[in-house]
Length: 480
Image (cartoon, rainbow, N blue to C red; front, side):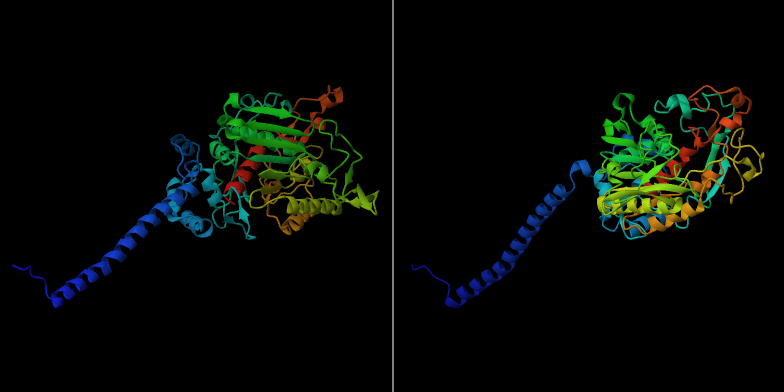
């Protein structure tokens, strides 16, 4: 029997069905293959762009240490502000992680992302992890006595403290000056967390530049951080004008550089600088001799005021047609020129995407107790309580010089955060070292009979007021 074959019409119908099935199967196969391919590619790209060492998660020890030291999670309103204002480039997953962690230590990758905070000038602020609540001016407030509080460290607990700052060891009979806490109006300062700060300083340099008052702030910072750095992994090096404290465990350094006028002067010897006839160099390049040591820092804290002589003429070295000459100038005018030189150097040398710059305003002095209602011929000697008048302003702080700071720094193209410690320090007539310091020489009978004649009403006891300066620096560094 001959085999039978389908008719031409049935064969044509079968071919059409197969073609129809192939029409749907082939595109479906291609779509599925492309999806698998791009999923693998996307996974690979994400793994490459966020290595494990830079992921947002933090270790359990760090998670435990932060709440224990006082960093409270942010409020919902603060979270919303952070999300809207400063974390626009962060993925939804990262925002959820940040929200869950609050103010906890973060990795370098998270720092790079979170630090995309926008300042009032529209510039990126490195190190920032949040914002001070709206309407809060941390520099306006009052001193509140907190008897239950204890100093953040003891004189004997901080090996970096110079003997001249140890008021208790040098015989000061009272210690209430250690229990006054700065309270901003309507808000609070974030609690200083040493572990958190050191994590943020990992691989970074922090440099304080100025005079002995600036050095006091530098020492205060070392004392505040000391417990979070194992003793075996820290060391301190001293050069003529440069002190370097290293924390190898964090690959971080905290440094001090002596430059009382910021520019070159005849007071630049860090050891022998008791010069009454002061000569300040102010011309193009007069900052460079010092500033060459400031290059590459990540946090720069500058100050100059105590060595200036407001109301007097000062010798300023200028340059014209290649020749130098000395010109007598009003201190305020010379101060303006030096600050402009500082700003010019910062604009040309600092990357605002990587470096934060701070300027600490003038530190108060208390040499005339009659100004706050005390004895006519007295000073800070014997004072044990702050000045309570919120408007008090002593003669040792020049408002004209303060206006120059606002004027010049406000015009800077490089963001400079002003740490305004002047008004709050004006109130602390009780916090100076007074006579309770290591004396450089034996006192005369006359000085022993009138101790106020030998009182240092310029420098401050530690622990004490300068710890508050660093709490304010901490607040503006991380929560501008």
